[in-house]
Image (cartoon, rainbow, N blue to C red; front, side, top):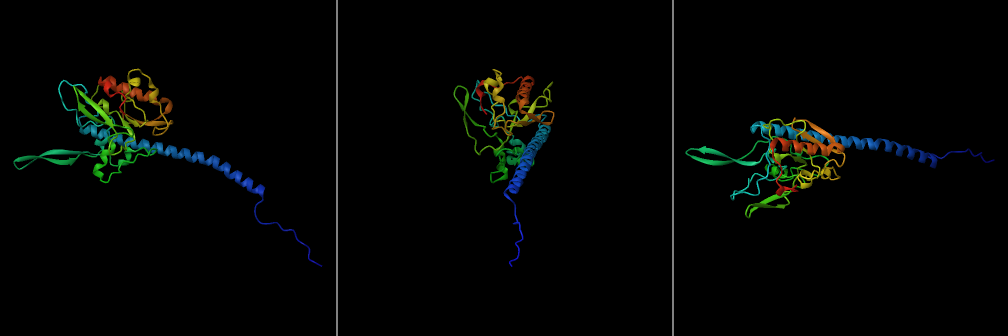
Length: 287
């Protein structure tokens, strides 16, 4: 007689068991992945906040050395009575290169003669990566020589280089800067910010903020008070979520998108009030 067959079960999962396992994995992924993404976004926002904090410390150190004045980026007058060359120091409203150190010359005496000795100004920010928001593709320090990196910090991403010419008054043309800009932040340099002004509200006046990919000095914004052009877009450093802002009192604060326009224009109006200076119409629309 043949031996009785004993029922055996094949090793492995049935189709139903596989579907159950896959369903559990998908459910867990749906729970954990958004949390991981949110933590990464939060980490980048915090890193960016620390960058602006370093820039703020650099600006205040610079201010101490320069008679309570921050970096001045006010553009030259376009109409002059004489053919006076515009200030060659001016590059853009957002130029933060003096915080890294720029080439200059020192007048020294050697024996009975005087001569100019090339020097590099003091560096107020020690890590060039502080000028880059981690959510962008800006990478300062791409040039071969470290002493040349300041050239990348003169313009924000979409900034334009200005070339002045004379024709019964100064006019200018715009061009793409060389080397490509690597600055992720906007600076209130056009107001020649200073701690010497009386009555300024340091809780309201900002020094720098995340590049929101907007042009703040248009006629629509400054004259017509149409602030739609200041709303955050997908091209802003942190998209439409919000951005970090460095205020005159030294704090760096995350500003959600719903409050972004109010804080940007509030700071501009505060500087206009205390400095009694406003953007000349000839510069309207220049990034």
